[in-house]
Amino acid sequence: MNRELIQLNHICFSYEKDAESTEGAPAPDALRDISFSVARGEYIAVIGHNGSGKSTLAKIMNLILTPTSGELVIDGEPVPHPDIPEEVLLRVRRKVGMVFQNPDNQLVATLVEEDVAFGPENLGIPREELTARVHDALAAVDMLSYARHAPHKLSGGQKQRVAIAGVLAMKPDCMIFDESTAMLDPRGRREILATIRRLNREEGIAVILITHHMNEAAEADRVIVMDDGVIRMDAPPETVFSSVQKLEELGLEIPQGTALTQALREAGLPVREMPLTPQGCAEAILHALGKEGAEK
Ligand SMILES: Nc1ncnc2c1ncn2[C@@H]1O[C@H](COP(=O)(O)OP(=O)(O)OP(=O)(O)O)[C@@H](O)[C@H]1O
Ligand SMILES: [Mg+2]
Image (cartoon, rainbow, N blue to C red; front, side):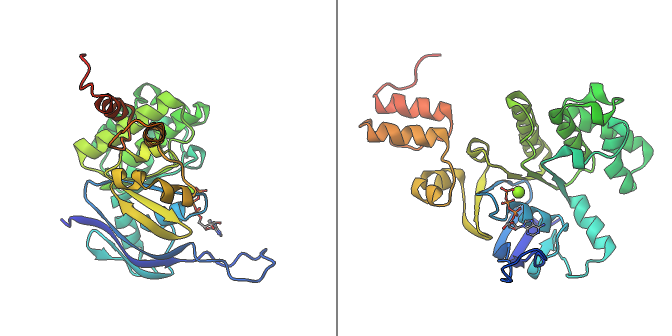
């Protein structure tokens, strides 16, 4: 078993020139010289402004798109391109699952349980195991009671949970979530994020979370910042989110905790750290006021 699950070495990708582009200038590469690796069990957030290349990067790792140049290695196996043999494609998709933004594009069957079974069935999982996998996956996203419902009658958030269960049932080593919580209400989002965290911590599934929510990214072990097809930062959240000026230059929000600390400093309260969470802020403010740990 390789520690490095996904390796990208100098990956470039360019969408074919848009026929309707009147300028005649070639489209800029969507990815330029991207190198990084994902280790087993890692929890990585990918952030970046609209059009910075996040979804393109995700699709390269799942082989929906083929790199224009560079080397992609999945679990120690170099992926040949441009022509990828079918068996390599299946092996990679089994290891790297992907959940998209719009669940409507992912649901195919007439019953929720059939939908969740669809992916693992295609991988040739035996019947008895299939039933258990579908059950566990639906339980993990709190949709067990909807097993025999019609997917198209569910709310957007419920559909997304079913879509996530469909990938979970394939027992991947890594799951990529491309803004998959975007259609959920705050409670649904919290539940899904808690599920994602649990899958990461307890099942050891590596997670790549593409998000526009800085507070979500702040929970990751590592944050990758994309900008116009290149990686600008690849560091722990504390490092990324304390680079306030750089984030603003890259068109990104700063997490509320960081913004609050910044405002307190400007107002003259010497807050030492740049906490990322409300709890961290409370502790840092108490510390700055000389009041350690309020009693619970
Ligand atoms: N199917 C496509 N054909 C041509 N160009 C595309 C296509 N999809 C994306 N692009 C271009 O590639 C670049 C990267 O797009 P991508 O969708 O990867 O960005 P993103 O970071 O996921 O953006 P968002 O935050 O809006 O989802 C953009 O310039 C975009 O216009
Ligand atoms: Mg995108």
